[in-house]
Image (cartoon, rainbow, N blue to C red):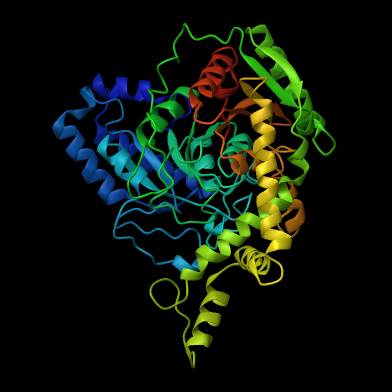
Amino acid sequence: MNYFNQDLTQIHADLVDRKYSVQELIKATYQNIELTDKKIHAFLTLNKQKAMFQAQKVDQSGAVLQNLLAGIPIAIKDNIVTKSLKTTAASKMLANFVPIYDATVVERLAAEQMINIGKTNLDEFAMGGSTENSAFQTTRNPWNLAYVPGGSSGGSAAAIASGQIPVALGSDTGGSIRQPAAFNGIVGMKPTYGRVSRWGLIAFSSSLDEIGVLSKTVKDNAVILSVIAGKDQRDATSVNRNVPDFTKELTSLADIHGLKIGIPKEFIGPGIDDCIKQTVNETAKRFEELGAKVREISLPHNKYCVAAYYIISSSEASSNLQRFDGVRYGYHAENTKNLDELYVKSRAEGFGDEVKRRIMLGTFSLSAGYYDAYYKKAAQVRTLIIRDFRKAFEQVDLILGPVAPTTAYKIGQNVTDPLKMYLSDILTIPVNMAGLPGMTFPAGFSQGLPIGLQLIGKWFDEQTIYRAGYVFERNTDFHRRHPMLK
């Protein structure tokens, strides 16, 4: 059982037609993972015993007849807590942490009787863009095992691209769903900030983090978002707003005639590979052929995004991660003489280099004498970025652009150059800074590696993004291609 050519609707139909039972489906899924993940290293923890028990319950209840998602396997990024199942955030600090509750999104999937197959690898505490910063293993890109899968949701993306799982959850703070989706040739949606509850997400940067969905197809993505979205009383930042059926317009009648799409000139300037620019141009032409109107727009403050983002996100990270002190839970250093030494040794030994780097940057930015010069200034820049988008959306319905300046790069190529890694986020960060929804979709290939582009929508207008992405997908075959694992 691999999921290269099956979407959720097809799997559901096969279960209803009794081509196989849920137990057989889950067993075959694990058999494929055991073979495939030796090469990919997408999973950190498998949920095999509990998953098989849940599969048996679904079979006995006959729930698959009424529920599209009953018995369907899903993977969860390992910074989303899962009751009685180890949740590490890919950090030595939480290497043996077993939560006593489920995140809201996990509860909502369980209510639909989806089956959690296991937890996927990531950059430690979601800090990174290549999944090389995990404390436990380096995930590989299924299209070429010598290349990174992107990050920080690289495990979720690689698990889907390699056919191990049909859908997965990830988190996106500065592009951590959209960039790995682009590198792996799949669909990745970062919803509007507040659309999905963050309760149970191990926090990196609270004003930027958002849980979202990775999938093979646009419609599958919309199905899962419809389930996990909605107000949660336990998360004060979740928005009390009606959650539509995001799949409603995704039919054979869907069209984009008259839709106005803008391409920011700042997104296709110097530093963007020619193959990426060419793909943007070809995709824009295809959208025009399908009835959309494409025009150039400007986001003038985009050039300040990276600097402002890393000040804000690192400042919030330094605040959020201070809870890991070696006292209450998590890694506890041995042979310490006093409380101060316990704090220092536990954090020095428990956190990886990238996490320490961001804690130091954030603590400095918030320190006395520097707050106004750095954090306050970054917050003001964030307001200017939001204004740029508001002005742009007075002219267009959607924004189209690249996700990353390049396709996936080789493992080890950039990991020792933090500045280069940070600058590679320049095209995804603006969406998080403004709290907008953005979706990556497969749009081309270069030298055997996928190229993904992103559609950015107005606040709480995921429907229009899905509709445009679905129409494009229906008229191309990029989503049908899959890697030949050797």
